[in-house]
Length: 263
Length: 237
Image 1: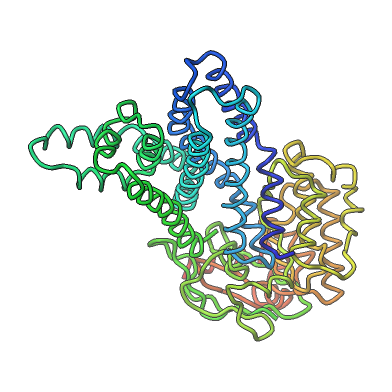
Image 2 (image 1 turned 60 degrees about the vertical axis):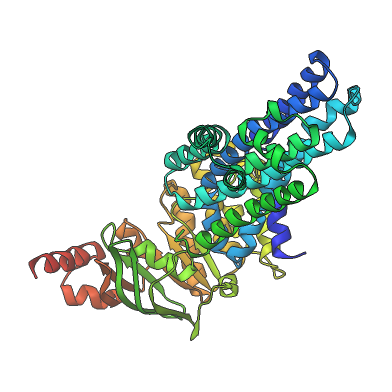
C-alpha cells in the first residue's frame, strides 16, 4: 500500500470519529425524516431538503475543515518530519475530510427516504440531484476551508474568515445580485448575471436544483433569471463544469500555499 | 554528518537566520543554545524541511536534503510540542508510523517499556495527560533506530524520572553511533549530554566547538556560566 493510502487510512479513522461528522449525519437524518413525515409531501419535500442542503452543507463543511486542519497543525508538522511528502499528506487530508463528510450528509438524507419511500410526485433523479449537489458543495467548501486554514495561522481569524465566506456565498452574494439587477434594470442583464452565478458555487448548485424542479420562484433572484436564460442541458453542463472548477481552484491554491508554507 | 552552509531565513521582514554555518559531527551530541528567538527551532525545522529556507544548503553525509524527504527516514525528531489527533490511540499512531516508514528492521521499544506506556497505548489521545503524550513523543523519535536524532526541548513536560530515563537513552544512542542535535533551556542538562556546543545569537553562530574548549576559552567551570560569559561579551561588544 502506498504512503498516501496509509495516511488516508489514518485521517479517515480520525475524522470518522469526529463529533462533527456524527452531528452532521444526525442533523440531516432528523431534518429529512421530519420533512418526510410532516411536510406537504410530493416533490416539494425533496426541494425543501435541497434548500436545506444549499444552506447547511457549505457552513458545516467550511467550519469543520478549517477547525480540523488548524487543530491538526502540530501533527501535520510531526508527520512531515517523517519520510512523507507534503503532496502525499495534503491529498490524504483533503480526501480524508471530504469522504466521511460527504458520506455522512448523503446517508443522513438517503436513509429516511429508504424508510419512508419516495413521496408521490418526486423522481429518483431529483433525489439524486440533491445528493450529488450535497457532495459537490461539501468538496467545494472543504477545499475553501483548506485554503483558509493554510493561509491564516491564527485560529480565530481563520474561523472568522470561514464564516465570512459562507455568508458571502449564501447570503451576501444573492443580495448583491438583486441590487445590481434593480440598479441596472433598463439594460439586458442576462450575461452579467450569468457571470455572477458562475462566481458563486452555491448559486450554481441552486440553478442545478431549480432546473431539476422547475421551481425558479423559490430559489432566489439569480435562479429566477437563469432559468429563463438557461433551461436545458447547456445550462446544466455549464453549471456542472463551473462547480468542478470550484473544487479544483481552491484545492490547487491551497496546495500552492501548503507546499511553500513554513510549518 | 549534518552540514548547514549559509542558511538564511526571514519571516516577512524579520530575519531569523542570517547565514548560519554549522557542522554536526557523526556520533557526537551537539547542544544548540541561545536566547529565545535566536533561531534554534527554525534551524532544526529547516533541516527537517518543515521550514523552507531562503538561501543556503543543508546536507546529510554530503547529500543535500531534498523536498521528497526520503532522507527523513534516517531522522528521529522530537518537537517541542507534541499534539496528536484526539481520536487516535497511541497504538494506532505507532502502527501508522511503522507503516509509513516501511520499517522492517527490529524496532527499539526500550523507551516504551522504560516509560511503562503499554497500559496507555489503547487510549485515545484526547484522554492522555501532557506527560504521557510527551513520553510517546520520545518513543516515536527513537523507535525506528534513526542514526540522526533531532531533539527540541526534549525534557520539557517530563517529570524528573522520565527526564532521567530519556537522558540515559540519548547517551546510549550516541554511544551506538547516533548523531544528535539537542536544544534545551536547561543548560545544566545539556552539559551532561553535550560533546559540542553551538551558540546561536541573532541568527548567526557565535561559537561552535567542543564543550571543554568553550569552558577553557571563557575560563568558566560550567556551560551555563560559559554561555553567560559569551552573551555578556556580545553585549559589551
